[in-house]
Length: 266
Image 1 (cartoon, one colour):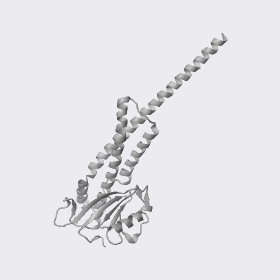
Image 2 (tube, one colour):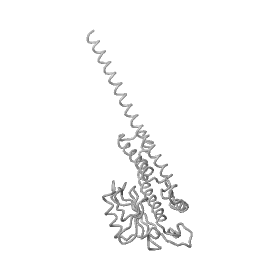
Image 3 (tube, helix red, strand yellow):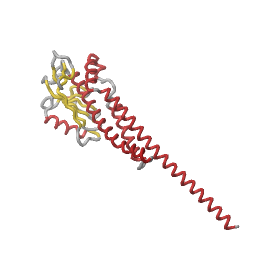
Image 4 (tube, one colour):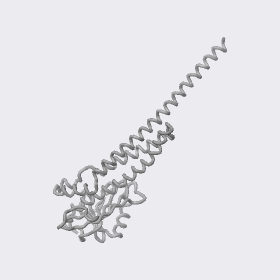
């Protein structure tokens, strides 16, 4: 296996697996490493894997046995490992005579050098990560809608601030992982050393709708966070009013006691 021809087949499967929130890949053996940015490793029995620190492994031309072995190996390296892996698959064909892009449900590449395959893996990894958080945000919206309906119909909501603050924290964590760790909206580092691949990167981002999906997810995150903050403010205001009434009651009680004492002495 070489950088010029890292895979043997002209048609193969690319499979992205989201296994956890983060991988610790600092001690990956150099003998198995084809490249470091992103980390690309040879697999026993053929094929290769591109590993990303935000918890995604993309396998190229890998057998089921190789995938199972890699998942077992990554398990102790994964932080906050998910119970079930998110997966996204894509068929890749190397056909020098055809234009590059998605055709008939498969991604056509004119060549399959290491850097081009790494770029495909990065686009696929971002797609599966976006899919994971799109599903998370959809479930948050399902929880928010009943609260909004209750607020509209009854003018108040049940519950305390802790639950809503937890949801705000979860939304901030999603944004941190997408922007800070995965850097979904940023240009891949690979392009700084291989600017000739800018065209392929633009094509992949367009085919997977990376920027459009990221923008839509950002809007949903902002709406969900704003809704949760509004609910926290409403609950806090309700609690403040209740405390004020308690204070007014105590003052009235103290005045009543003072008046009673004056009356008793008179």
